[in-house]
Amino acid sequence: MVIELFDYDAELSRYNVRLRAVAGVGPADRVLDIGCGTGQTTRDAARSAPSGSALGVDVSRPMVDRARALGAEEGIRNVSFERADAQVHPFAPEGFTLGLSRFGTMFFTDPVAAFTNIGRALRPGARLVQLVWQAYHRQEWSTAIRQALAADRMAPAGHGHGAFSLADPTVTAGVLTAAGFTAVEITEVREPIYYGPAAADARDALFELRMVQELVAGLDAAATARALDRLLVMLDAHDTGAGVWFDSSAWLVTARRGPAGKASVGSCLPHAGNRLTLGRGGHPVADVEKRGDDHPEPSPPGEAQPRHVQQHVDQRREREEHDSEQRPDPGVEGRVDQRRPGDPDDEQAEPREDPTDDRE
Ligand SMILES: C[S@@+](CC[C@H](N)C(=O)[O-])C[C@H]1O[C@@H](n2cnc3c(N)ncnc32)[C@H](O)[C@@H]1O
Image 1: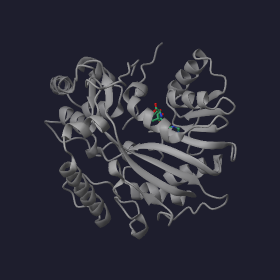
Image 2: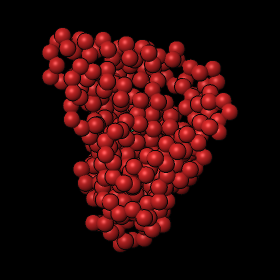
Image 3: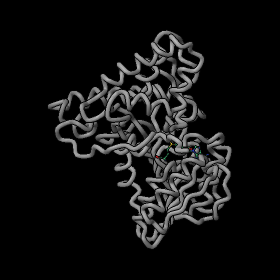
Image 4: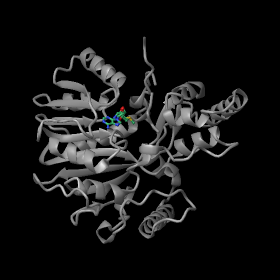
């Protein structure tokens, strides 16, 4: 039986380029890829580390099976995959020189414990490079899908469970610091994501996502049909002529495993050496060293925000206003940072295979 798996490689092709550039896997690196899915990032890392190796771990058996099959098909000898919960798996201590993750670290039930465990697997000083989603309301895909499917009723509670758990940079920096990481840097990355060559393919692909399944769960047949019609119309409106694309916003999070024995589980305050940077132009968003709130939840627009999150939002708004005033031709920057494949100057459109997601 062929299990349909959500095609993250197609969805995240633009982000993959960004992750690879920052990860800079070296020829002798021993790479740990966390929540590796079907293993594209692990295989890429293994290819870049001919005298090293790459291990991908994922809790999903079908994902790991597919990753192994693809690794074998591509004849990559220094890549391996294990079905494992990265939060608790007993990795070889200090067995890796680089940790990587493309949207695979947002689903831990105890993030500090998970990153502490991952830290133990890394050599002191080793880098951890991750991509994580920004808040759900910063995601065109999330808001558009939710609106299409839940337009005539209240959306189910929760804004995507784990998928946005690291959306607040202050929280992320705090978690990593508490887990013994230092030199945390968090930078905004905005890239379009791809759901299929046409609206119907995108709809079918999206049905592999738990978020989408949950939005239609409990609807009767007529309401489901209406929701699907709205989804199709919405997806069609996002068909660029070169596939269905949505804007999205992520954080690229880099950190170093601190010296052995320095994990300070329990504290969620960022390390004094941590730095947050934001996006294009490098406008600083936050001075995390001055903040004290623990684990604020990212809030939807219009809801009351904790003071420092509000500051963050205000600074972002100022930055965006400043950017738009400075921009001679709004189209130019759009093409540079947020090209959609199908735009005349686009070179990176990639095909997709088959689609699953536990995106929640
Ligand atoms: C959004 S997908 C990304 C997959 C892959 N990194 C990619 O970019 O193609 C998140 C992945 O994290 C995995 N995952 C979630 N929790 C995990 C955990 N505790 N340990 C290992 N993998 C986990 C899921 O099974 C899923 O494959």
